[in-house]
Length: 205
Image 1 (spheres, helix red, strand yellow):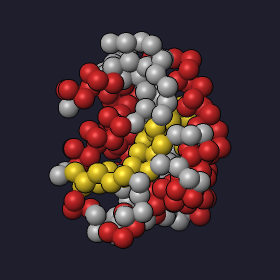
Image 2: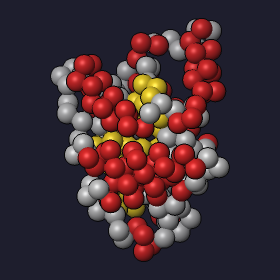
Image 3: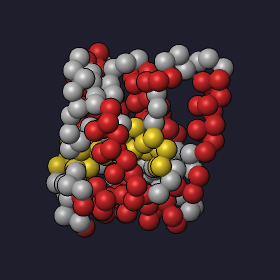
Image 4: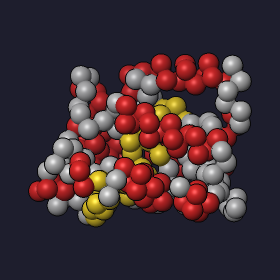
């Protein structure tokens, strides 16, 4: 495994395919999308064009950035429309959710969790699990908009205190409240810490 820093070129955003009840969540998605494009990075995401997912993609595209959507065939008409998917720069259609997550990991240099539901939670927890197992050192961020992730962060701390996060030094996601600080935080973290193991996990999935 190499410990040399690798430049951040693309970020994966996990978030809800619904807008949620707090209007701040949709606005956060749009602002994050614009920030990704403004910093010259590419978006990798689950391909949905509705809800917060759609807001992030729209924010990137409106600022002239590049969007790669990765979506299973069976979700194409549930989380998006065929027409809206045609607006993305790149669309990858997978056979199932496992292939989708594998491809998202492979394509991304960092991971951000915005507000979302069970699927969003499952995705960021899996990425943290792989980090705990020492399979990657890609930056991970909780976009803690209006304290959305506070219960999750409290649970993680409880797990640490109870001795169940056995390599806690490998599971240190950034917690960032202000949407405009997320991309600068990722870039600073990557420069400071370096990353390793990206290729290792791909062969083990």
